[in-house]
Length: 224
Image (cartoon, rainbow, N blue to C red; front, side):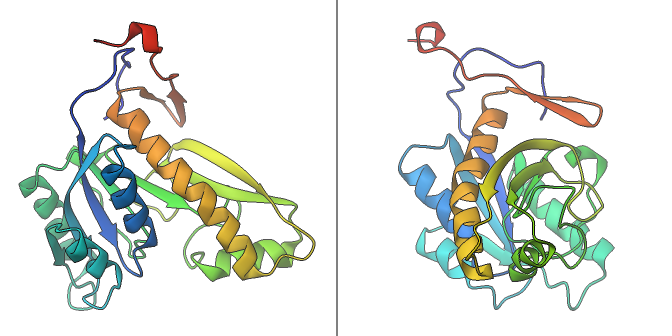
């Protein structure tokens, strides 16, 4: 997916496979952005790690194809194999982890084609066990003054891989985990679509451990 970049607007929508484990709030945001023509993407499949994930209803309500790969019954290797085979069948160009809580083994043909968003500034407050409310509790317990969200290419470690972009959120003196989580999620709703748009427009370069995101094309240089 990373490329040397282009200064022309991408007309074709990038095809997404969205992976979920829970309520699907990130999936819902992506569905809404696409419906409002604010994101040049098409969700070609939604894959859940459990049949009880609330996000499956968001997928069904939007008329999206969805399926369950049950991590409770399968090994990580087999579950991962089934996920990526489903992504290949759906012709997904980019796999979007949207509150996906299971370890995923990424095959070579999907290197730099899987992205994740984490509700903190990696490398702080991340790794196995740091998800949801626990992240924000840890930020408050540590006394951090700043937190935020991180979009990164995923690899075979939790919350690891080249960082695409980060947004900063101040931690307020009277914050509780719930209020902090709500403000961080507001930034996630902007940051994830922004990262996907940059990839769709071929503006993302990976240079070792670093990612360069080229600026959007100027309106006067876009194709008519």
